[in-house]
Image 1 (cartoon, rainbow, N blue to C red):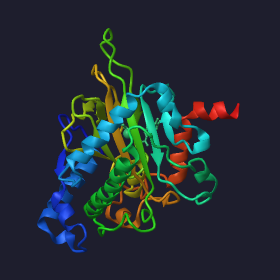
Image 2: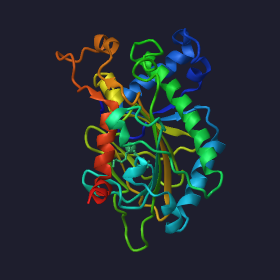
Image 3: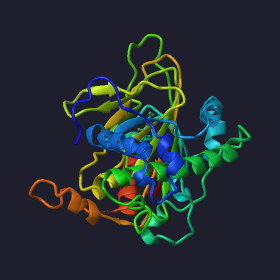
Image 4: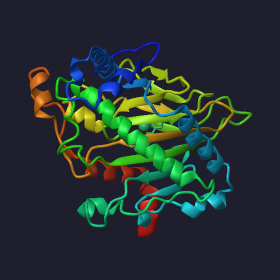
Length: 337
Ligand SMILES: N=C(N)NCCCC[C@H](N)C(=O)O
Ligand SMILES: O=C(O)CCC(=O)C(=O)O
Ligand SMILES: [Fe+2]
């Protein structure tokens, strides 16, 4: 569970895990064991950590943010060409103020993308998100670059989860079968305006929330600190950027699968810098139709207190869709009326 982590989020070099992550006996490797121990501590105490040695080139990480800045700098009419609506599965561009968190407007604009899937594959629940991702035509290389980035983030997330699986006392593959054999993913490409000259402080860029899936990988600008993570004592700890790193955090599904042993930690964003900030957040999730409940193996290893189950079972797709509908309640109402 989340305790006070006063100063800084942990930093984990996962390269020893990546070297061995395709060997079924990886657990016996001393380097892997060390990484696994660090992952366990970080996931129990904080739910947030910096990942270094992750194998995604700094060049790609930086390019993803450079083209994102270029997109958000375009005139509004240009961005609206890929506007988000319920009829396109909530995929595309949303202007500042469209996204709500806990009933309040967020000060950010974004492009939302989801894994694409065949019509009807996930029944009525899935219908809400059916559609094709809308990529900007400008900058030209956007789609290709983002698709490569998504591919690399997917592989990296699977490999981090192998380490987490070992940390929880399972085989490396607990998160690859029925639950996560066909992982869903979400990507949010986000822009936060800088603070105005006369104001000292900006509005909330994104209100306090937890993420919905298994793991999130955050790629943020290096030159401003805006993401804040909450510890149990209620302090907001700034996630100061470390160039070349990705921030990884635990989502609601991993909390449930681990019976609450790992926490999905609250976080929020306030950009008090005068400059515009971008963040590209990749969310690695379970199968869309997975019925998520504590995995037996972890229930046995961590029978929490006297209660055997402390978290509720959910169907991931239903959890996601209900969050999307609350976040974009305004869009939904407009279409109905
Ligand atoms: N996929 C994720 N995590 N998106 C987070 C977006 C911000 C929070 C959202 N408006 C909410 O109310 O949950
Ligand atoms: O902008 C950030 O650093 C984080 C964004 C975030 O938490 C989210 O989109 O879920
Ligand atoms: Fe988040």
